Image (tube, rainbow, N blue to C red; front, side, top):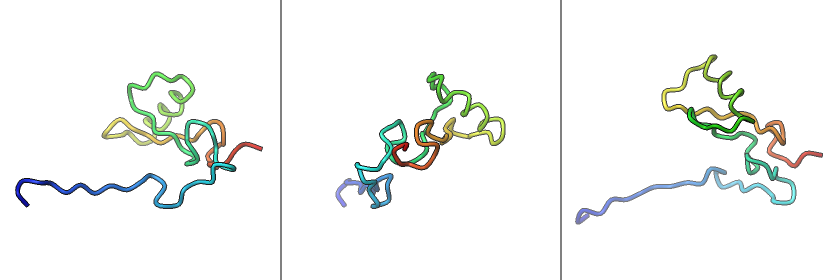
Length: 78
């Protein structure tokens, strides 16, 4: 292919886009979980990351923690 490389990509929603009218407007953007990295200093998710790390140490430093606004539902709080 003359040195060209093919790249595959997909979206994090798997083709099922959340409805903006009902999706959580918080950090999870309608997914219900938030990716948090080892060196992330956001206090609001740091404690959850530490619990995840104690229970199941991460090889890459990331854990997906429950969104604090929607409690993991991915929907706007009532």
